[in-house]
Amino acid sequence: AIYIGSGNSNTRLFNVKALANGAGGDRHDGLFLNGGSATLEHVYAQASGAGVGNWGIFNSASSPTLDSVTLMASGGSSANALRLNGGSPI
Image (cartoon, rainbow, N blue to C red):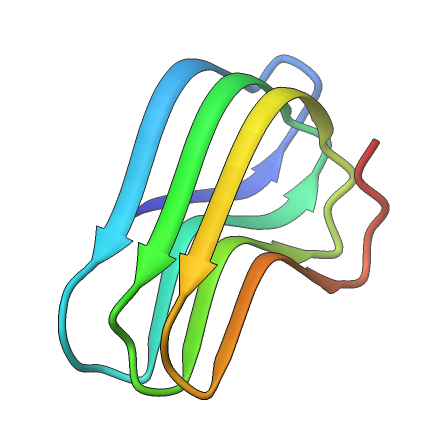
């Protein structure tokens, strides 16, 4: 639903609801963070319906700050609220 590529400390999501729901496909991500250090406050991310991967947040080599974040993932052969592929969220 939302992709952030190399977001720096000035990149901020506040009071956002990101949904990636629907039947079919191989992968649904509520948020995809690809590098950088964005700040997420009061964020709700949900993914469901893909046949293989459903991830609330897919974090790839990013070190975001998470504050008051709610994550949901369900369905498929792999469902993770927070999927880490490098990086170190705090």
